[in-house]
Length: 218
Ligand SMILES: Cc1cc2nc3c(=O)[nH]c(=O)nc-3n(C[C@H](O)[C@H](O)[C@H](O)COP(=O)(O)OP(=O)(O)OC[C@H]3O[C@@H](n4cnc5c(N)ncnc54)[C@H](O)[C@@H]3O)c2cc1C
Image 1 (tube, rainbow, N blue to C red):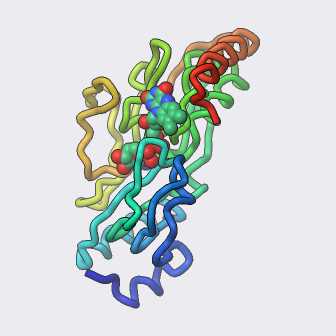
Image 2 (image 1 turned 90 degrees about the vertical axis):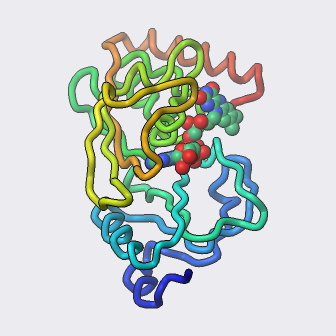
């Protein structure tokens, strides 16, 4: 099914056709997205999802593309990638951070370090976004996202509403969760422990060096 001209006009600044996805893949591989949608904010995203109730186009969510292989023939339907406005980080309390789902893990780790919050060091070794990290329950060196997550904010694709889901409602297992597929995470709240920046920096550097030995840091 094709998107109507009206819809393309309505979201003209945020939607493009036949977009090369290799630019959005960590591996720099893959063909085009039939439609590539970068919502500016939650309300535009909800509006788009409501419109898609009639179009019923297949929706593929892309984070930083570090755990996704895109086939050369590309992707039919809409590939949705959160715009940079979903990359904001805020300090909520002395040990709690709120991060937009598109924020890179490395940035979250550095923000935590700069605010003397420990336990986020492992994120500096993972090349994804924090939204992708929740979906994949990403982790390394004895830590993972389930250990620092407080809650997620997400949009329910079918209901077109915002949902807040706490960590206790999510079942985490190795590199995955039981979260339903019809959620688009828009932000996360994470909790660490207050620690001197120097100590955090030391751990962060040690982990990065370990990963470099494995040739896993770009
Ligand atoms: C060199 C290298 C090293 C790596 N090292 C590690 C490691 O040490 N530990 C580890 O756990 N992983 C590692 N990975 C895998 C990968 O980086 C992680 O799984 C990462 O968390 C994926 O995040 P992403 O944003 O790139 O997700 P993507 O690859 O873009 O997407 C992964 C999944 O998450 C979904 N998704 C992404 N964002 C959202 C969102 N906002 N809402 C809903 N769904 C979403 C996608 O639909 C897809 O199903 C590594 C990968 C590479 C290439």
